[in-house]
Length: 458
Image (cartoon, rainbow, N blue to C red; front, side, top):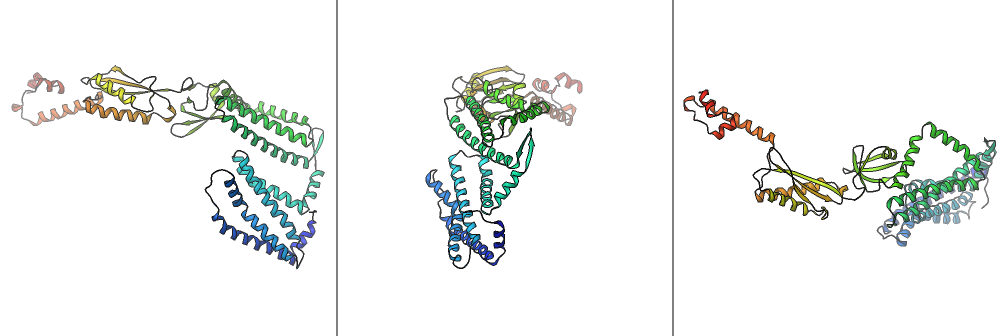
């Protein structure tokens, strides 16, 4: 279709025939919308991934514009018998282009790995392409491009038109989008290679992404005829920026690659950094995500992992030692208590058989014998509170059955002794002096009143 005159299109819009054509388009769109509301619930919504699901999704997305296109085409055939239809002649290819754009973007979503960038920019891409086509069909685009071509900007002893800059930006966006999509596809294949170490896989994917971005920008500049010498200007500006205040950002990027290359910290490791205890969930270019056992995620700059001390609890082996301590009274059967403690630890499915659990006498305290159970677990990232609770519940149950008594704390013993002394003193004060009996030695030693002291009090 040849480019139309914009002035003639404007004149048609304000004429009676133009109003009729706009009304016909509005009615066609309304009918298409109503038909879509009726037909869309009949489409299957629960399908397995494959061609059937892609076909149903395509029908769902294209039903409204396709029905609008068919109804507008029929209206154009009928209305063309009575008057000229220049507006409908422009609307038909625009509607058809919109259908093709939506179908292409939907298929593109299934051909490349899904990403937030594609989802967020899908509508922007569709309306941008459709808008450019609309400007071309109405004859506005050639005039707009001519104006942009006449606008020159001096840069490094050269003159670059505003059209070249806009085309460079658009081409750079397109090539970067393609490069990122291909790198994500490559990244998905690399991350599925279990034979390669996880840190090596992450390093490879990051290098591929950087190389893809650089190549995309170089291709965009070369296609547009922009000299690569202009990159020296950008390189100088970047160097000044690094010198003025971007050292920390550059340090974080370099530190991220160092961490991945030396494998000191890997995905899934249980670490402690600046009193933050958690699992390494992701190692990004600038920061590392550490997920605590309570679900919170700490964003730690990579430079911190290089310059500060990091405790990696699973660096050499993915096992963690868990201790369970308790105290029993001196008159308890210690061998029986140790056997119960060991059996309770061995019965838990999270406890490793090798190294084997060990029940030990930790120390002899003032109020009892302190016992300890040492067990090794293979999933420290799942926490220890639940496992410790299960072990203690089983130990308490078997202690009751076996008659093993837990030790009473020194503070509780002192409180009980003070209460007994107060109760005894109160009872003595209420009884007449002549009728007071001589206290037994055991009670006297507890309350602090010996028989001699009682006699002196009388």
